[in-house]
Structures are given as C-alpha cells and as structure tokens.
Image 1: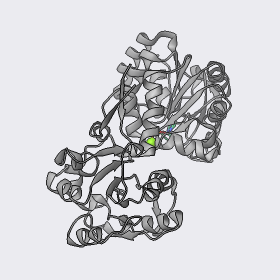
Image 2: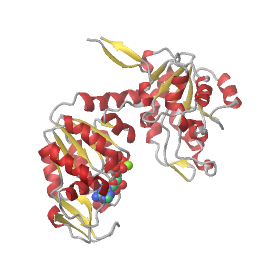
Image 3: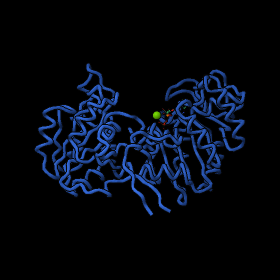
Length: 400
Ligand code: ADP
Ligand code: MG
C-alpha cells in the first residue's frame, strides 16, 4: 500500500542551491554565552549534510522573547560563536533578519558557506506571520528546510509563512524534524502494547488534550507530579497547600470516571512544610496529607506501583516530572521513573516536554531513552492529534 510521508533533505538535490533552514536555536544565554547548546547540537546533522552536499546554508531561528528595549540580550551573536566551534568552520552572522545587507551577503555566498540571520523575532512580522516578511525570507532561498520541531506548532513567518507565500518553493524536513515525526508518530498511531503513558508536571490545562487523546489508546496512564494533586482533590482527598488547578477539578473528576482503572494515581507522596529545598519533609499516604503541607514528590510505594506497570510496557511516553525535581531532595520520584525507563530494553521510550527532558539529562539517562523530544508544546500538540502548521506546509512524497 502506498503511504505518504514528508519529504526530507535526503529526497532533494541541494548542490549549489541557497537553502534556507529554520532551526531551533532558542537556547538559554547567560552572560553573553550559550549556557546549554543541546538544541544547536541537535541541528548539526542536517547542517553538516547540507554542507557535504555543497549547499549554501542560510540558518534562521527565534531566540527568547525580545522586546525593542531588551534586544541586546537576545542577539544571535553567542549562538553564531558556539555554532562555529561545533562546526569547525566560520559562520557569518547577520545583524538583521532581512534587508539589503542580508540580500547582499546571500548573493555573495559560495557552496559550503554558512550564514546565520539575526533573531527572527526582531521582526514584528515573525509572530504575525506577515506575508511581506515571509516574501523577503523566501526570496533568499531556492529551497526551504524546517528542522525546528519545537516551533512547528506556531504559524509564524519563518515556520509556515515562507512556504505559504511561495507554494512552488520546495519545502522539506530536516533530520531532527524527521526523527521527531517518526518517533512521536509511532507513539500516536502505532504503539506496541502494552502502551503506558506517564504524566506529571505542573500545568493540567496544557496536558488535558493529550491526556484525553491518549486515554483512547493507552493501556495505562500513570499520573504524578503537581498534576496528580488535582486528581486527588477531585477524588475528595485533602491535598493541603499543594499546587492544584482549581478550574480543572471537575474535568479531572470526569476523566477519572471515564478512565476507570486505566488511570493510576499516587498512593503515597512526599510532603513538605514549605516550597524550599531545605523544607521539613516526610512520606505520607495520600489519605493523610497534612493540611499545612504540600505535595512535592511521589512516594516510594507509588514508585514501586508505577514500576510494576512499566516493567511489561513495550511503548512508554513520558511527559512531566513526578515532583519538584529542581530541589535534589524532591527529585527521587522523577529520577526513579527515569531509571525504570532506561532499563526497559524491549520498549520504545519517548520523553517529551522541556522540564522532563531536562530531568532525564540531569539523571544522566538521556542516551538510554529511545527518543527525547526537543519540542515541549509541539510534542504535546502532536500527540493530541493536532496538525502542526510548520509540518503541514512541508512537501510530501508517496512511498510503496
Ligand atoms: P514539561 O516541561 O516536561 O512539560 P511541566 O512544565 O508541565 O513539564 O512541569 C514541570 C514543573 O512541574 C517543574 O518545574 C516541577 O518543579 C513542577 N512540579 C512537579 N511536581 C510538582 C508538585 N508536586 N508541586 C509543584 N510543582 C511540581
Ligand atoms: Mg515545562
């Protein structure tokens, strides 16, 4: 049967061409240098491939949330420097996103050159998906590549506009985008069973859609982190001063009824008397959360119960830490789950979400997962079954 998939950089001839690549270089900057270059490294395979194929590589990304007043803190300068080190070759950094200097520099590029445009969000048209900005960007390119999965849920000029204003411009996925679509696609449409989902973190509102969607396909959903508190409260338990999404308690009650035993909640938790790394803390049964305490982690019996469910899983998707892992004393539940996933050699393990990915890296276990998604919001929207605008615009190819 013929299936359709997105075209990738492997499917096109880029030799000698001006290739405009949307990357995700939205990295943390501290004191004028890149504090964590994971995202830059993640784009290297695509950039190196294009260079090996003799393309002229024009890179663009947004960085943070610049305003006209604080622009200096969000310039691409530090990114260009780090990229030069990682690539081992010069990177020409532009002082603008579009304009005569950019046109001029691109006109003088030779195959194998790398140019980085200034922060796309320095242009007000970026977030508005302004067709005029998109046209100026498109004019730089013979071919468009999107390797910024983490920004693909946003319809901005650099993610969707370029292709929308120039439908004839070939538009393909980079390697990172390809891998994200493949791994998350497997979780969404063809999970090997048992399929177990682990959800945690802080904001229920962001995760309700994905929870609803995965309830239809998962064999079990294990809920921890701040998210569990709202469910415990919906069951009538006293959660003291814990983080609770009051607006979501009715919804949580409905989901509990609908899901039956598919949904597993913590049976014990770590409670603290304050939100602080040195708070007084101890383990209690969920029925005995002191009214003046707050839940900060799952307890050891919960870790054991979740481990039992996970041990037979063939597909696992994990989003959201099990506790306040930023404080080492309350990271145990999160790290324990990370260790369980790392030990599942027969299973596909996919981790999504910015903080979850950070926790897995902190535990030193990122390499032991099948896939750690670079997209927070994008991975959740994808798994909700939504079409990501930045993916929708990419060209497709028919495959036998
Ligand atoms: P992700 O980025 O992986 O999608 P979230 O952003 O939803 O995850 O949630 C991560 C945050 O949730 C972390 O900062 C963590 O401290 C917080 N968190 C986890 N458990 C609790 C809890 N019980 N109470 C308060 N905050 C929590
Ligand atoms: Mg987060």
